[in-house]
Every structure is written in C-alpha cells, then in structure tokens.
Length: 347
Length: 79
Image 1: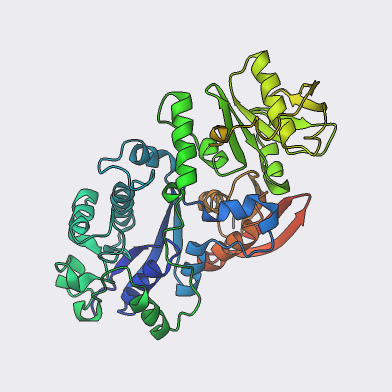
Image 2: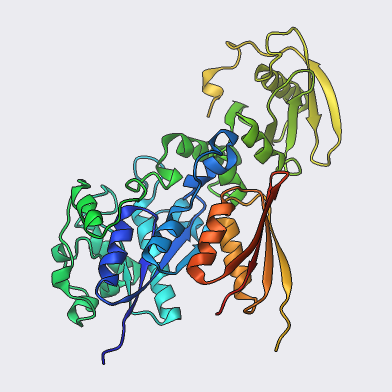
C-alpha cells in the first residue's frame, strides 16, 4: 500500500484556497491548512472594534474554511518577520503599500519551512494565473516557486495544467488530469466548481483581506513612517491606523479621534501609552495624541478635540487632558470652526 | 496519572486572530485534560475560539460575557 502523502494548504479564507485544498483532498492526500497573520490581514478587526458592527457575524474566514473542509488549521504569527517584507520589498509595492509578490514569496517560504519541520510532502496554494496583476501572472508563478525555495513542491491545483508538472504530479502523489487550468479574473469557473463540491457558502473573492491594498490605510502608514523618520512599526501602530479619524495639524503630532463608542472603548486601552483628551463639559469622543508636543500644541489639539464634541458651536468648552500616568487637568478652549479644521490635516 | 491543571491566558486588547494564536501557543504547552481560561475583549473570539477548538479536538467548557469582556474556558483534547 502506498504511503498517504501530506500537504499543507495556504488558507486565506477565500474561495480559491478552499477549492485548491478540496481538489487535493479529493485525491486522498492528507491536507492541513496554514494561515499567516501579518498584522495587516485584519478584515475582522474593524468589526471587532466598532460597536455598530456588533450585530454582524464576526467569523474568521480561514478558521471557517478549515472547519468546512474538516481540516486542521495552523495560524502562524509572522508579525515581526513580515516587517522586512513590507519595509523593503525586493519586487516593490503595488498600487498602494501592498508588496504582493514579496508577500507571496514570503508565505510560501514559511510554508516550505513548515513542511520540512512537520514532515509534510508538498504545499498547495489557490493561485490562479492572471487573477492578480502583481503576483498571479504566468511570469510571476515561477518566481514565487523559485525565490520561496519551494520549487517543484509548490502545487497550484487551480491552474496546474497551465504550468510545468510539479513533483507531486510527476511522482503520482496527485493525478495531474484531475487538476485544473483556470486562468483570468472571471470567477465563473470557481463558482461552478464550488457548486460541484456542494460548497454554497464562502467569503467573497479575496483581495479585501489585506489592509495594505487599501488606499486610505496605506496613506496612514506612509504618514506614520514620515512622521517618525523611519520605516518601522510595532503591532499597536498598525492596529491604531485602523481606528478613528487621524488628524495631523502639525508634523510633530497627530490626533486619533474615536468615531463611535466601540472605537472609544478600544482607544481607552491605550491611555497608558498616549496622552488622551476628551471634552468634559459636553459629550465627545476620546482622542489619543501621538507625538511630542509643546504647551501651545496641546492647546491647539484641545481645540481640534472640541470640534468633535457636541459643544462644537459653544464659545468655550472644557477639555480634560489625561497624562500617561493618569493625572488629569482641564482647560477651557474655543472649539475650532469647521473651516478651521483643514482638509489636508486629515490623513 | 498527572493531575490536570488550570491556567489563565490574558488576551485582553488583542484582536482576532491574535487571541486564537495565543490560545494555540498556550495549548501546545498544556496536556490533555488541562483547562485554560482565556480572557478577551474582542467579541470575535466567541466565534473563533470555539471554531478553533472544534477543528483541533478541544472542548469549550464555558463561555461568559460581561463588562465588555469575553471569557472562554476550554479543556485540552487528545494531542
């Protein structure tokens, strides 16, 4: 009896990687899933933070896919290692701050390390030729295989017939004839295949799962790097870029203004790391202040904070400033008018 | 037979999937039958940790919600 082969599938939570794993499972291969958390695959975070989204189901799609497939899922924290990918991508950025090709190479490389450590035979991805302009073109496929070190242990079941045969095919671990030749951006073949497998619930086509493809998020990241003078970050930095209004009236500081209750509660957790402000004479949002400030800056920031409180049209409101050690003082300020809060301050 | 232990994991302020990752890492250090209490502030854990337990053979013993905290107690399954 031949040995049952084992494969690890990169599971994003989208349909393609789900189908790719399923195709190989159908051939009797033992499949487990792997999902890498970079800190930017934060699709669920906005829902988690914002109170108004609490009614929505807030599932992790990768876990959900693994459960539908009946496979184990290994979620790997790569936050620190991912920095070198984002800060200095060999193949550059996409439209925004998305280093898609380097990211794919990195993840396949991590999967290669994982199969060596765990005695698995090969790697599966849900890549489709022509689906992504930066990382999933026919010319980029061999680059990912080679530069990740996975070489012919990387099987792309969705488009394998359009690529040279890999070791799992050549060795007969999988039947190449039962693999597919999908190309392009159309989702029809995947939707049809999902139907054939009896899969009727899946998350929408991937692409929205990485914040680095988001124009506004990318702008905030660039602003952060510019303000601190280097391209570095910690997890808290990149989480906070997702929360609140970011307003930078001066190069040396910015304000992070909660937009609703859930964000306010989330920002409360950072009061030991940042000076914070809130309007104490009228209802208003919690605001964190990021940067070094003079007394004049503090007063200026308080006037911005006042603009977002319900007393914005009053001549004077109270703004309480809380230091990182919890000590508080309250100052009276005149809220800025709408016209005084310049559009270009909004990051 | 080794006596089962109960440990607590503080996953407050972490957003999913980090509470799941921290749970996964902690469970690796525990033995079958041990219990782990995970204290979180991201409501997403109420879906994700039970899902993670189901696919990995662990058991959710109890879930509690209150004061914007979500507490899940799990029992480590066969390893």
